[in-house]
Image (cartoon, rainbow, N blue to C red):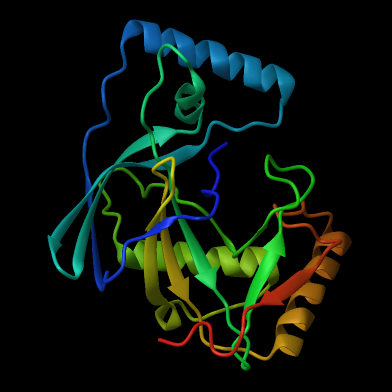
Length: 231
């Protein structure tokens, strides 16, 4: 499944306005179609829990002016990402994800550790996840990304943030081309964040809800110095 890029990532500094435009997906050759189907069958055989859900793929990034970045995207499903690994029929298909920088009131930054069931077990990262496209005919815009980021924050650490309070922080591009749109949440005391995470774990355990991609055993941690998230 698509993953967030490993640091370091190129920061596209100066982005104050992010535009998104949908385009048609590239046409795969018959050989590429056969290769992706074969790889998907193999992946499902190894892990029957895999789900070929809808996803957003970056088709290009273009500066419109010194502060406006245009992200062109198309609709696909997760199986397309497997074709990136094919030595003969590979396609360039960068994923698009959001993350949330959640600072504490003393300026540190909350991170979580990837669970053992994930492809990058043990890696520390910000709350976030890959983007799903809107319904056919609906536009994908910055507000959609902001709502997705708020949902990731609630699902991963139990923090209910007002969507409108999430500010565009920065945009990054990883070494594989994956694009990250990062938001900044209002500061919150570390004790309150720990309590919210504890309540989320308790609710999951009581209701038998599947655990998210973060390790519940490790808990959350804080990194950085005051005030690493200052605007």
